Image (tube, rainbow, N blue to C red; front, side):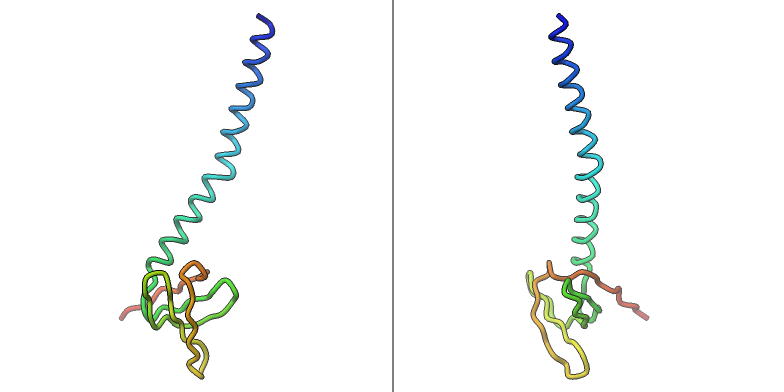
Length: 94
């Protein structure tokens, strides 16, 4: 009987620790991922973006999972995957 209580205690302790790790690690990461997906999906032509590598530019074309941005005064065009976008600045519509 004492052995059963010891095993039950260990199982409950492990269950508690796994639940705690889920709350501390997994849920916040899911929230960040959802927020990032929403930000990337709200991107429109004309939005200013910053990539993971720090390149800033203006979106000139969006197609499937690729984005073409235009940087600097020389109008350099760079083709990127959507997952490479770190920040999207909202357009101010008048």
